[in-house]
Image: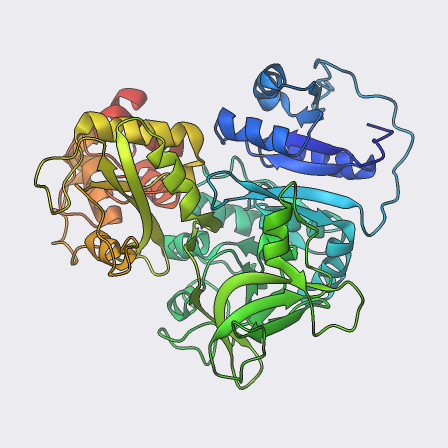
Length: 566
């Protein structure tokens, strides 16, 4: 790794979010390579694709990831070596396939050198790698330091996965400015209550997180008095969340709404919320350009639209990434020449977001021009999920829609609408899928997609509804998938005298807003996700049950969870 090839190596980093992942990322950069974060929770097929597509020849792995990394190497068509990341516990853990060569010092990077590759969902059925350079990152790092007041006195707790570009930014901005980065435990397994206690214990003053997790943190009800600022990104921020946060934040705590696709190096716009003036139903703008970027609101003819009118958002400036690795056509389609910049060769990125410019110059987000959605902070192309579902044996067609989660402001869940290869004769209305086929579809998707891309529920159709011009009627499917009216209150259970199954059923019913939970009901079919699983675990532990998030997410039904904790 001390002498990267002339075209610059891309090094995979397969490690649980924490010290090992940070060491791997910094080590790759110091050696003159770019890094590719590999989330250990992804299916093997997706990791294999990313490694091959990015041309990775070396994978750095922590102790927990060594077996997965060796599996990737064995399956790779081209040679891939595995190097262990020392765990710092007295044993350098270098028992991998190749020792680390003597390091002859860091290599200075040029602006055009690649810094990292992050894979995002792709509409063609496969993820696409976004190539981000040092030239994209340096202005962002300088701006972030000034805007957020980062420095040696800053304390940040890791809350974001580095496989998500917001997570890369969270780690690098903290350590590169001399701040202190705390690791609370495995991401997705620390309950909101435990996370809030860690903030207080460590005196954390800066929190970077998604609106979804912050909503769970607010709902936990514990005071967050050490925070001087909360930086939200990855999802739409609502006025309701801001007003609810007043119950746990000090009046002086700032709330920043950050915006930026991966293609514009994490953050290209920022808005500091005026907490004193915002009301529950007010929209929260994505704000003004950050760093040295430029935000254009353009028509279909690429002409600026008047303030207040709807247009598509284009981003110009140093944040615009190199493009999509190996996808020249898509890169040319989304990364366009910037006709409004005086800099030769300047480009702008077409975000696909519909916006308007407010009288004060801030940008207000209105929606999408395509079928891209945000779920749990991840930007998803519904077409990729649909391609996987359609490939499942026994399914002839599939469409996926995103619907709001009842009682959870800003939260969405995915619903898969599928046509079995042999549909029920005469079936003209949605129906529940055959249990065997449902299990097969869910397993097929789980083996090929990240958990946040697997639909929470499936609906069977004889045929998908069409619009007059012959396209799938997504509006009709969304209406079919819409949340039911608020259910009757769940029955009150005397936890002190109830059996564990009844306690769990009552907790699930309350958190998922359903009237009844049967022992074999599937947690995801009821609308559950990783965030609501944390709330279930917190309530269950408070009731004296020894349950953790893995039990809920792996067991998925009360009867299975009870077997796991018996």
